[in-house]
Amino acid sequence: MEVLRTRDELRQALDRSPRPVGLVPTMGWLHAGHRSLIARARSETATVVVTIFVNPRQFDDPSDLDRYPRSEAHDVAICAAEGADLIWAPPVTEVYPPGFDTTVAVGAIASPLEGAARPGHFDGVATVVAVLFGLIRAERAYFGCKDFQQLRVIDRMARDLAIGTEVVGCPTVREPDGLAMSSRNVHLSAGERAAAPVLHRALVAGRDAWAAGERDADRLRRIVAEMLAAEPLAEPEYVSCADARTLVELEVVDRPALLSLAVRFGPTRLIDNELLDGSEG
Image (cartoon, rainbow, N blue to C red; front, top):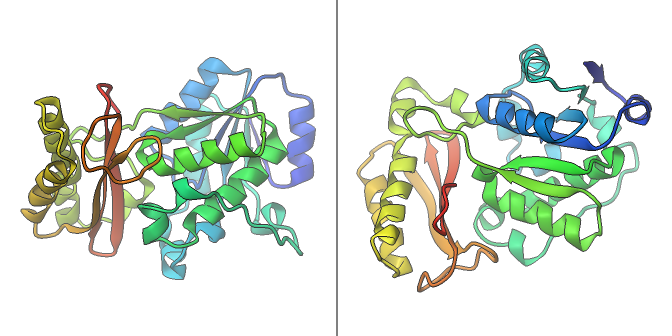
């Protein structure tokens, strides 16, 4: 396994690597969710590239960027254990060279939910992923479904710009108590960590009501919100029941839908979702 820093090193390594290439873009502080993405790429492609880059362009709050956990030694060990071939861990100037002056902005799919709560966030995501896709030219790129809107935004960008990388969504990996794996979980206090599984319990309550026949979207939102309200440490930002394709809020769940939420525990903001389409998300 090679750890590469520059664009030139990356290109040279890719030139001597077998195809197809599987890409796993990350911001580091890898966990079992990332392991599952690397393992999926390892099973489906000849060369696995993991990128480790904390992208400053997708943080609307500088303090959030500063607090983002980092440990390259930890990440490299996980990549090696999962069989990655190449790690690209560049400095900011290799991703955004001096004079870089382009922003990739995806339209309607990036506007609601996280796009509304974090203005500019998805412009930063789409821009950095476009750079990664252009440099690596992977046949497949792997993303977790916990960040469902991000997955949709990146897929839309790749299709619209005729980028020849297939965007592959992979199931959310959870702790035994249901909390979705996230690099941000490390910031939770002991009390907040004990309370945080309420996110998944609330979503499951909504999913169970839908499975039992409830189709009123407002009722499903209320079921989720009422369970969150019972946890004093949870501060919801939004609860959504939206069309799973467009992410437009629904009145009646008469098509595949995404039940999603964003909740703060102190300064830590967590997101999660459940698909209402008869499959396990």
